[in-house]
Image (cartoon, rainbow, N blue to C red; front, side, top):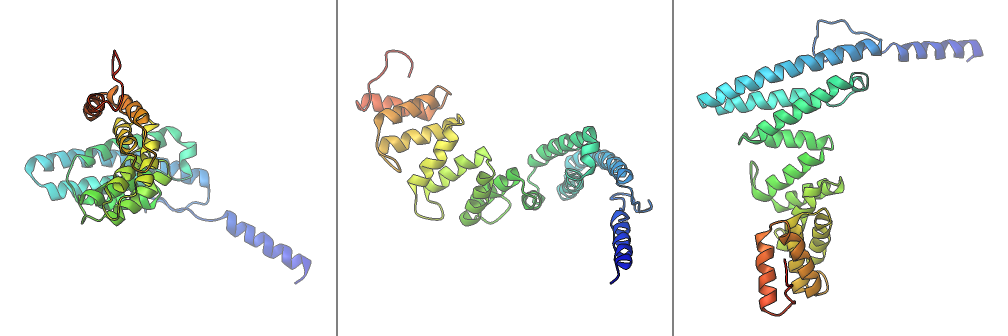
Length: 265
């Protein structure tokens, strides 16, 4: 191929690359455009439109709820959230940050309302969001499988989803994994692993995790037995109002496992 022909081919390819047409995500009547700035503007308009639709849909859902039409209410709520979620990502968001922020806030508010229902579509939404890498949804899927809420109870699935959430540094998953490994739901208990997860949660000041750590130190499960450490973690939990920790401290003092302080715990 001659140099001049190669140059023509390259130029044609660049024209095709720069001339990629974008379609509107919410208005099929709009002509496709090749200008990304126009496309971003259109997407911001679509985002506003979807937020307005979601507000109306949720208002209708509340009316349906009052009528006892729960199935239709659930479908409405789920559809609105799925539509909003489409605009929680995309290149347009950088240029229209205010609208993008409003989309995120609206989604969070609508999701909180949806969470208060017993709609079966919640599982579908969790699965959808989890597939996008959302740690919160992975955690919710894990707890749903652990408790058999909306799905058949399955400890193996629960563990897998909770682990994925924890891998993305979702704090609540640390505590849940600690419970799973200490209780040995789908497998024999592994107190060493439970200790590690409770430790991560306790360091974030989770009172229940601190209480669980106290128990492991007291009994020497997954860690070397240490009444001193047991009391230390029980105290941390008790200072946050954990009644179980207060009771355990009294037990240890009565049993002379630790010296009772003159003041406080």
